[in-house]
Length: 202
Image (cartoon, rainbow, N blue to C red):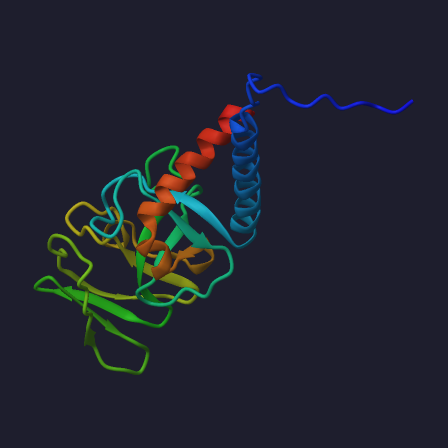
């Protein structure tokens, strides 16, 4: 039997495409979140900054990405696992600081200026435009094998190697690259949005 299609009456209201468009947008957003989350967790991890020890580079509440695969060099912003250390507040698992010296280096601070002498080399004053406050003076510290000397960028408030000494290089679990700092505003908004979406559909 042949089906007869009745033409739409002139006064019959058209069905609005808005619900379909909204559904498509939601699906696309969810797929984008899933894809970006997979890529992010594969190569990086998100770090929520707590405290003011790295101001003004990053502030409390900022979210930045750290690389899972890395070679940490002097001047890098690093994420350090301090969960096994008694020198930090109970419940503190990770801290974000700046790597100043590595094994074999000798470091000191005179008149607020940090100097680093690589093994067999000469002291060189560090150019540190990122710092806030005044670095407290300290005497020579020679970094032992497999260890690191680190400082916070906000030198007046940072709890770092000037107080707790050196830690192990193997305690570094990530390096925050320059590009991650440059997009921290976007990263913070995106990660908060992604978390809200996950909570909504979980």
